[in-house]
Length: 362
Image 1 (tube, rainbow, N blue to C red):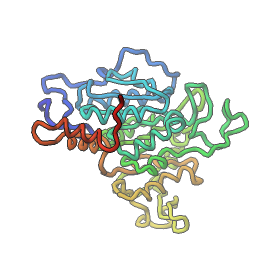
Image 2: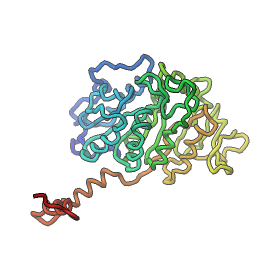
Image 3: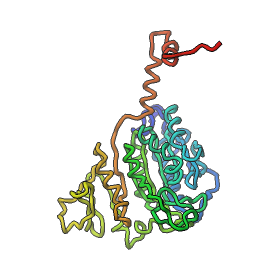
Image 4: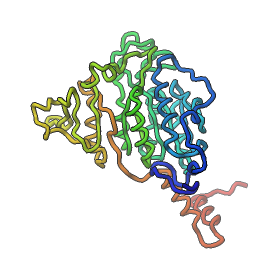
């Protein structure tokens, strides 16, 4: 494969150089930096880092054509530990910085690594507008439902009543549901996965990288120091069959031991609800459609976590649709502005910039 051949993944920028065929295949070791990994023992970030390091060679890209941008928090140390380009940026502003990179450099595969505090508190507006604009980037949101770097304050995803150093009598805030938020912002690719499930995590990352537009992936990530056991229900072998609701496009949404439970439409609320398959029959079970242009059903499924099913969580790709991207559109406008009669491209661009009211300062 030549270095000028277009990429196999539509989600990666056209024109990016691939690894020449005369190079040795890349491995995860080549994406591992010489920096000491400094997370607490047992942190879920380790598992995500190893999965990403193992996955990146599959993209077939040069390391210099990949950039990771992070904000502030435990997860935001990520760029240090990858041997790619990277930037440890400003609190909550990683999506905005990544937007500039993706717009200016279509030859780069742009990734954002953030946490539930970084992305959903000070960075809330930056996140939703990146999703709304559908910029070509992949956003990994590590959700441990706590502020870990600053030693255990409640975060925007901590459950109501959470006892922490900053809420000794219990949190009064209603938590964000990151997937619901992303769907409400018209995210074109929205998914959820788990730090400890390497196979599922890698599959979701692969689909996210292949998507043209903003890919949003929430990763449930355990903090063993300040919020240990937050996701025990979906990790414990004795309970995870009933706790995890797997979403697979084109398949009935069933879970539980031997698929004994499933989702159906709820005629009373207009959403979805959990039922025993034996009570309604298999034909009544909702079939998952991730490609549905209307996000209503995907949103209803995302609400199960917050609608009384506190120990159950849908996992997988909620939505995956195609729509125009911001950075492609911006580059097209610039190209149009520069396209003029022979010898006059600068004059036309100057006229566009200087159009309307102008002042001469003397």
